[in-house]
Length: 363
Image: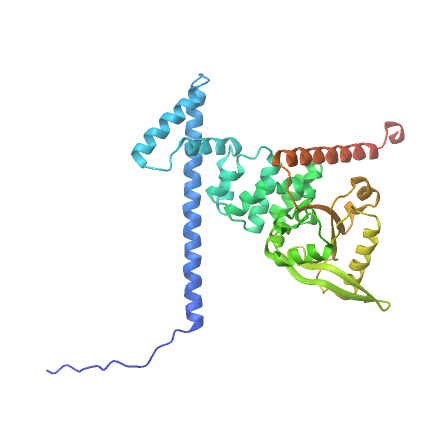
């Protein structure tokens, strides 16, 4: 019986873009789920190892036992299981247990942060620092590299939230965690590091503005996530007189227009009224339905905290920050930031204490 010969068709079959997109999404979704599962299991493993080693160390009363057992255990695990079991890795496991004594706390994080993220966070010295970087990392989806860069740049110390009393910091971070509520105090910084602009000793505001536009991507990275560039030298006309905003941005999470005014001098009180004019104009003519009121950032070469306080700029929609085109040593920056945080928190504590009614008045 003769076999029927089926001729091959020369017609080219094209794949539907919708079909291709749907299958690609399925593959990517599956990969994310697999990665999340693997990361969760690895995190559980490392926490359990840390817990086991900790209990073993606690059972032995010798002061030097911890170092010795970690070294010996590292050698034996490396012989049997290969690379990945260095002394540092075992100390990472141990320190993770110290920072997260209950695994259920770490378990919730492992769904969003990798073990590499966790290793960066556990060595931060302060609990509020750790909470800040955890919540911001989850909220803005930082890579490990981005997290490391933000820690190295002392982002927490540069945000306004670090100057608040500890109770308020915890409340604000709790809102970010539970409600995804982000505030200007979590976004705006002081100072801003603009060393990447490569400005010479002498430059004009126009030079600075041009350098920012040329390095816009780096500038936005320094500003923070979710800033979108809208305009340079935006012209507005009031009573037939033209004014120009240096830089105009939009922040997606804050849902606000953000004006940035560049100043080469120390902050002066007149800068406030100029920014208020810009913000009121934007609020009247440019603010879209559903947006919050515009906010302004005055970037100055230097500023006086007392001026800022007396002009009540800390409580309004205008922020004043210093910019640095050249960076001092990290040690000097740490001293400066820690001193500023201590002074701000002490001042708030004194104000709060003074507001309490006296016993005589209460009676």
